[in-house]
Structure formats: structure tokens, C-alpha cells
Amino acid sequence: MRRSRIVENSRQEYNEIVQAVLAGEKNRFAEIVDQHKNLVYSILLRMTDDHDEANDLAQEVFIKVYRQLKQFKGKSKLSTWIYKIAYFHGLSYLRKRKRWFTTNDDVLLQSDGNIDEEIALDEMKGHVSECIMKLKPLERTAITLFYLEEMQVKEVAEIMNITESYVKVTVHRAKKSLKEMIKKEYYEGVRR
Image (tube, rainbow, N blue to C red; front, side, top):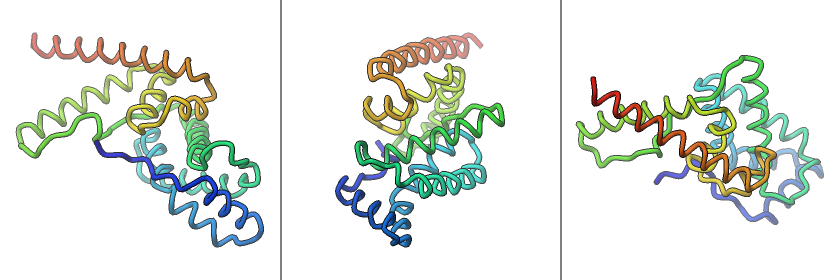
């Protein structure tokens, strides 16, 4: 399974970089951007389904990260803190645009290269993505962070500002809803 998350450097390393930036070594901020830009872009692309919007929002996120860097206390991973800023910035943008995010993810299903299988796989991914879009926004976010971004329950809870047990319940409900929707779509497709 392909992982889209970054490999987190040690907290001490990031704390040193953060302290250096705060002490005036502004060029060190580029290290933070380089390590986290793919993660930030990925979540914003999922939320907007538009490459240009995701790029613009990612730049805005890193401006926010830079301005709020003194608020980072090192209690969580730097990537979690940045992801949280990206997530809420994306939500704010979507509220303004009255849109919700889509997931068009390769990690849901993978194939070994057979063309017929690839076509069927793409079709199935499309159905799964449509079903994910039908979930409640909270369920979509939880299932995306947990399964597609492969985050731990604790990280998802921290990002979404909900308890770990509520993350588990939400993911369980989302899985159950997805299973029912996919089953229904399958049976409707068979009857056609």
C-alpha cells in the first residue's frame, strides 16, 4: 500500500529547526516546508479536488504555519500540528465556497497491471469515491484521515478536535455506511 504521509523526523530535530527559525534563521523554515509540502498539498487536494486551488491554499497554510510557529509547543508531532492548520484552513475555504472534499485515491484498491482489471478497478474506485462523497462530512474526514492518510486514531482525534473514542465510533459508522452503499450499488448494477 502506498503511503502518502511523510516520514516524521524526530521531535527533537524539528524542535531545533523551529527554535532556529524563531531565533531568526528564517531560511531554516524551508526545511519544514520541504518535509511537509506533500502532506499539506495532499489533504487540500482531497478537500478541493482542484490542483490550482490546492497549491494556492498550501501556500496560505505555510504562511499561517510561519506566523503561528511560536505557538507550536512540541507536545504533538510537527506534522500533526501542520496538518491540523491545513485541515482547518481547507474547511474554512470550503465553507466559503460551500463545497465538500472528494477522495480520488489510488490506495483504496491496487492492481497488478492487467488492462481489463485496471478498467474494472478504475470503475470500482469511482463508485467507492462516490459513496465516500455521500457520507456525512465528519465521517468523510475521519475515514480519509484514518484509512487513506494512514493516521493513528490519536492523530485523527487531535486534528478533528474530537475524542479518540468518537473517532473510532465515527470510522465504524462510516465503514458500515460505505459497506451498505457499495452493496446497494453492486446489486443495482447487477440488476441493470
